[in-house]
Amino acid sequence: MTKTEIIRNFMRFDQWIQSLESVPKKDWFQPMKSGKWSIAEVIAHLTYWDRYFLKERYPLMKHGANLPRVIDVDIMNQRASLYAKSGVTADSIVKDFLETRDLLIKAINARSEEEMDEPFKIRGHEATLRKYLISLCEHDRHHKHQIEDFLNKSQKEKELK
Image: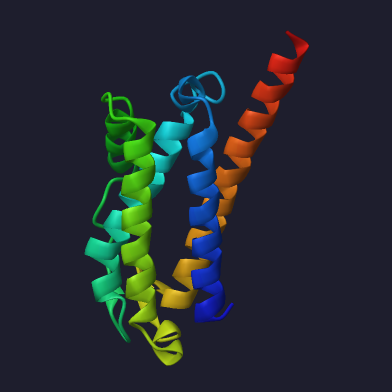
């Protein structure tokens, strides 16, 4: 995937996130399945991870770097969940996500195609910025499918009533 394709992927995802503003607000904050996150929690989760990437990972992703694991995944996810449950509005969650994702796209644009393929290590495993960003695109897609499945199921349940 080229840098341009990665950016297009993120921009299409941004548009899809914006489309969620039409989802009834009550659906935003209910768990998508028993014991699972709500739409609000998922979007907050994506925002928190993008911020972490921009602040802690992206600046270090350079040729020959060795990036340690510096964050507890469960703690990060818990913080995102608590934020989504704090009384913040769905509109604010979308706005935060889009602003953060815009910064991510600008950061990607600042790197050349060659820099996208410079090898570095994360916890001893070889990586490149391109591979990392492709995994973020896949992560977006995973959560998009979760949300779409929930919304489709909700719609079907409403139609049966």
